[in-house]
Length: 128
Image 1 (cartoon, rainbow, N blue to C red):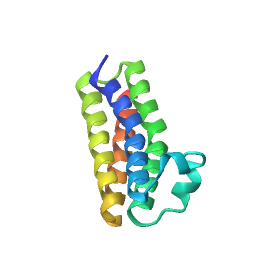
Image 2 (cartoon, rainbow, N blue to C red):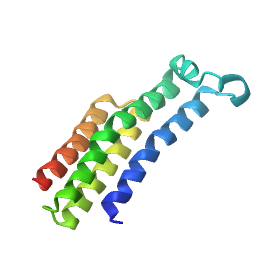
Image 3 (cartoon, one colour):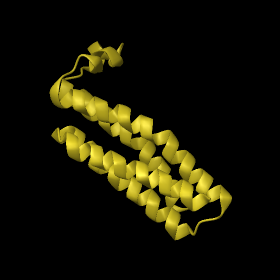
């Protein structure tokens, strides 16, 4: 399995980290709040709300990224090093985006998001 394929797994785990962080920051109690965790997270504020937003954004970015990696592999038109580079760059942009969400740095968060989106586009272009 290639490194780029492994980054799909990493990207799939990122929202789980954000959800756990949001719950911890919001004071989630498993016995009390696990019956409706989405309602709990919807009522959080501050750091917990930003971590929940990061979770949602990770889920939104996952499908296009996974599709780009799989399609780029399937076409066989790009060098493996190219695929690995853009997949790794996407993961780094997503890590930066999560950090910026948590640190409440809106402008930098948007730049990190754009960087990640550019990586997805680069994977599709490499597949062409």
